[in-house]
Length: 358
Image (cartoon, rainbow, N blue to C red):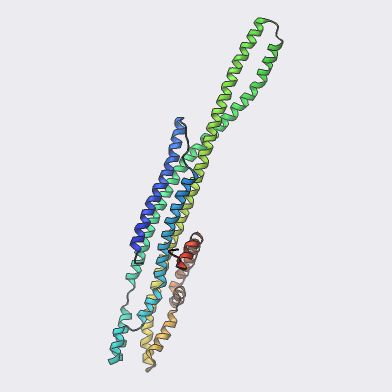
């Protein structure tokens, strides 16, 4: 995690750029809505290429954040090595043992007794919190944008429903005028009296004028309905995108928060195991003087285990009051990891196989 700060800065820049792109798209939707309200031409400038650009950028951003999260997982997985080293004698303790085995053993026991893992735990939690804050900021922004678009979309849906109703009423009225026009045309065709004929022709002209005005109104309402429909489709597409992006942020946040709980339980279990192992060493020497230190270490290490999750489960069995909580944390972590893996399958494969630079 040597490059953690640099990676965080890169992710922060990517988040800021993503937020700018997202706000720009939402702004275009709001501008189109304002134009429609004022009766202006409302061309909705949201092309698929623009959406694809936003999605591509957020995919890269989320992939980098996923890499950061997996980096924290790698650090956690390396804890076993650190604890193995705590359990074994240091170079100085081994050197002292050449002259005094008792002094060497007491030095190791004291080191194990006072061993503190809080610093490492707090460092990991601190790094995790930095990423969580970044993700929560992005999530808040996505929710704000979604709320804006949903508000506009709700108004537009109501307006289109009203427009479609008016359009159908206009069309029905136009259809109702056809028989009247035909009837007048038939009367004019058979009318012999010039005055009566002129009156009928005047009525027909007025009816045709009204008919043409209504047909024109129908076209205006139809165009408005189609514009509103396009706006609605674009709005729905953008809301779907925002919701999907928000879901990704929540998956990442959930994994980080669950991982933090798991690390707290893990560190607590390993810390207790060190103290227990130290106490076991003392009792072992009292009862079986002459047993080799390496054999003692091997026995103690067997109780600690090798795999991180197995180590935690095994050790917590000795602390019944913690077992329920530990099991719940492990189950929650398994679920969080599964959701994380579904969304970032390719990134995880690249990370695990170290497929970089290709």
